Length: 85
Image (cartoon, rainbow, N blue to C red):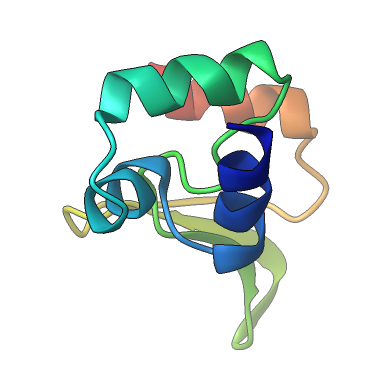
């Protein structure tokens, strides 16, 4: 299973996509990823980046189209709290 987790890490795919493509039960694969101490790099939102036209702001864009603009210096802890709620 460690080899599959390493392959997933290098694939750049979500756990769900990787499991489906490799005919693995998603929840079993997720269990092993967590057991081996890895985290999904694609938690379901699209991107966290600075807007080229708005140099002093940060944009969090969700898959449903909602965008949140924050000051560029916003602490990561604060951003994570906003995303989780």
